[in-house]
Each structure stands twice: as C-alpha cells, then as structure tokens.
Amino acid sequence: MTKAEIAGVLEEIGTLLDLKGENPFRVRAYLNAARTVDGLQEDIGKLVAENRLTEIKGIGKDLAAKIVELHTTGKLKFHEELRASLPPGLLEMLRIPGFGPKRAKAVYEKLKVDSIEKLEAACKAGKVAALDGFGEKSQQKILEGITLARQFSSRHHYHKARAVADPILEALRDHPGVIRCSLAGSIRRCRETIGDIDFLVSAKAKDAPGIIEDFVTMPGIINVSAKGETKASVVLKGGVQADLRVVADDQFAFALNYFTGSKEHNIAMRARALRLKNLSLNEYGFSPAKEKEKSAKELGSTIKCKTEEEIYRALELDYVPPELREDMGEIAAAEAGTLPKLVELENLRGTFHNHSTWSDGLESIEAMAHAALDLGLEYFGIADHSKSEFQAHGLDEKRVRQQADEVKRLNEKFAGEGFRIFFGTECDILAEGRLDFDDKTLELFDYVVASVHQGFTKDTDKMTQRICKALEHPAVTMLGHPTGRLLLEREPYAVDMNAVIETAAKHKKIIEINAHPYRLDMDWRLWKRAKELGVKCAINPDAHNIPDLQYLAVGIGIARKGWLERKDIINCLPVKEVAKVLNRK
Image (cartoon, rainbow, N blue to C red; front, side, top):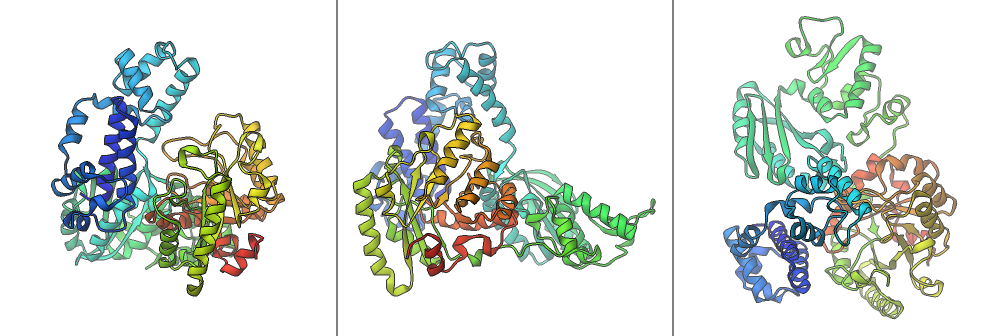
C-alpha cells in the first residue's frame, strides 16, 4: 500500500471507532496518525524496512505494527473486523455534509437507521426531529445534505483525479504506438471538480487496438465498462470513470479541441466557423456546411490543422488557453487580441497562508521553510491560527511573541541563502467583524490573513457586514478562503461576494486563492470582476504539511481560469517588493 492508501485506512478506522463511541483520545490518535502518514517526506517502505516508524511523533508500537501490516499485505485484520462490526450504510451516511459520527450513531441506536435511504425516510416522517439534540431545523438540514451528497456523488476533487490520471497519461506517452497524447475534458480546463477523465491519443489505425488493449489492463484500473477498437471506458481507483479515444494524427488537434470543451465554448466556435467560413467544425475537422452525406471523418478536413493554435488561427482568433474555454468572453477577447498573458507556476516566488506545529500543522516552521526553498521560492509566510481556534491549538498573545522570536532567529539563519520568512497570522474574524487579536498584538505581524472559521449560519447581510468590517481594519492584509466552502462537502456560507470584492478594492486589501483542493476559494468566476476593480490576489496553499505546498500548482490553474496575470498576484513579486506591499521594510 502507498502512504496515501495507508492514511485513508487509518482515517477510516478513526471514523469507525467514533461511530462505535470509543474513547475520543483513541479516535484522535488514528486521525492524527492518518495526517502524519499522509504528510511523510520519507518513503514509507524505507521506514518499514528500517523499523523506524516509532521514531515518528504520534506513532507508537501498536500503530506501527498496523502500518507495517497494511504496507506489506495490503489489508489490516483489525480494520476488516471493525468494518464488519457496523452496518456499511453508516459510513455512507457520513458523506452527508454536516452529518458526523455522533449523529449517525444516535439515529442508528434510536431509530435503527443504517443507510441514507432510511435516514431520508425517517426525516420525511418527522422521526429525526423528535430525537433529543435534533429538532425540525436539524432535520431539514439533513434532508438538504442528502440532496447535496447525491449531487456530489459523481464528482471528484481535481487533485485526486490528477493523481490517478497522471500515471496513465505517462504510460500512454511511452507507448510505442502512440504519436501524440493529452488529457482533455474538464481536467484539462482545470475545473475545481471533475466528472470523468478524458484521455486522447493519436496513432496509426493498425496500432489502435493494441493501445486500447494495453490501456484496459493498466495498473489502477478496477473495472472495464466498454472496449472497442478505438475507444474504451474504465473505472479507476477512487471510482472515477475514464475514457480513452484513439484518433488519426491529422484529426488529433480537432479532437483535442472538441473533447476539451467546454460545451458552451464549442458551440461558440462552431457558430463562428459557420459564420466566417460557411464550414462545420467538429472533432474530425472542418467540412462544408451543406455537405449532408459525407463528413470530415470520411473526407478529411477542408482546412488542415496540426495544432489547436492553427484551428483558432483559421477562425481569425488568438489561441485560447484551455482554462479560459468556458464561454465567458474568451472568444471576443481572442478576436480583439486582448486575452490575458496568464500566470505560470514558475512566476510564483513565495506564499503566505501556511501552518506549522505551533498550531495545527505537522511540520516545524524551519522544515516548512526549507521545503519552500527547495521548491525554488524566495520567501515563505507562516500564518498559524489565532487564539479562538482552540481546537487547532491557536496562539494566544504570549505564544505569538514566542513565535515572533523564533521567526527572527530563523531569518538570521536563512539570511545567507537569500531567503526570508514573513511572520503572519491567520486571525479569526469573530462575530460582528471583530478580530481575534487586539491592535497592539496585530502590530507584531508582517501581515494578517483574516478568515471566518465559526458562525457559518448567519444570513447574507450579517455575514457580508461581518467580513466587510474586518476588511476595513487597517491591520488586515488579505482575506482567507472568503466563502468557507469545502468542495463536495460543504456549501459556501451565505455572503454577497460582490460587496466583499468592492470593499477589498476600496481598502486595498488582497483576496487569496486558497489553493487547497478542497477549497479553491475565492471561486475563479469572481476574479475577472475583482481584477477590474484592482483587487490583488495571493495564491496560498493553506499548507499544514510539506506535501501541501505542491497545491500551489492547483492554485495556479484556478488563477488562470480567473484570467489572472503575473501582475495581478502579489506572490509573483520579488521579496523586497512584496515586503513593501505588506507595508513592512
């Protein structure tokens, strides 16, 4: 088993123990161990082979033995027995947003509800509202959550889709029969969640059946749904569906453009081809619009295009990057020559919203800073939680000063490498827009990320006023994860983001793209307006361990979808310039 798979099992054990009402300290031990294993920098196999698992903080002999069993056998007897001791439907019920183990345990013990279907029926019959600790409002929230869970069931987080897609893509690229190869669909457009994965390759006709056969037998494929000579559909680990299409190389650019989408972008492209050229445009090429009996598939395209760039050029357009193909003004901009020069990953020079062991992170500030330096960054910002986040070990005023001393010491250590650590905080926005620290404490920081972590149920007006008031505070530098959403888990809280953006513009505040793939917040659809008003962006991974820093790449995809350029993003600035933006020398 990989470390990610082991972490998944440990997390499920913690959840199952919670469902059984086990000691909360034991539950927390498994959940913390899952996070620790998932964030390991060393190879898990090496740690097992060298018998060094117990050297890791939080991994005792019992946990180490279970990890060894998982790694060496691919299963764990304790996990299997624990799963068998509870109805399988209880775990499924935990997919409902806001419906945790304690509630699942309560409805199971009192109503014998052990599936989403039974829970829905009990809610509609009013039985859940009658239970202690629930009530009518909770019952309605559960029904709404069931609707969301069903809606989310066929969607997958972007980073998880990439994790299963990339090894297959590399294997296809290495295949001797493949001429060209690419991902297509929503994953190529960097959508925040993915329905399925589209692979596209070009090859000679004689090689297509062999490519298909090799594809359906690749590691990571758990089921073959359909298989033909030029197309196959499979199910990958994690339940995501993937399709492979094999086309002739002279059709590759057209097929790539068509299957990348979006549907709305394709409609606009077809309409333009018809209006300008009196040609039909599809996955095979250009063909005469009046041709009824023969198609580009049979005759070949009337305009030969080796690349997507040539397709756009044929339609008198600048090339539209895949991330922008959402029919949100990109065709008009491509025609006028006003498409943005989108930000690239290599443009990033640092990041700000990150956590350490001072609050709920898994690594020291020094270890995180070294990892940022290894990524080629020039600076790293630490922003641990403020005191109200007690469950995340938020810092009080005394610990803030102690952490400031550590950052000062580390900066002296890193000075010779031309690297700087900025000292920040993720300060809670409390009720009515108050901040979690007083002004004197806030003056200690190089920057302040203001975020909402509690009180999500306020109405739109109150939440909007709360956030806008915080943005008016002179010590606040940037707004963290503005809508509080957790993709496929929790809907955004009610907030007027246009008003928030206008307030940020008025007070010259930065808004982050929280690049953690469960958040990706602020939403890419809002960035064009924010950019027009002059609001700057910070791409932050909200990293709690070293691997999380890699989420910067996911954030870049969202920034590109939001039409953002290098000049729009403060962490594309060199260290001296970004220090001025943060109002510190």
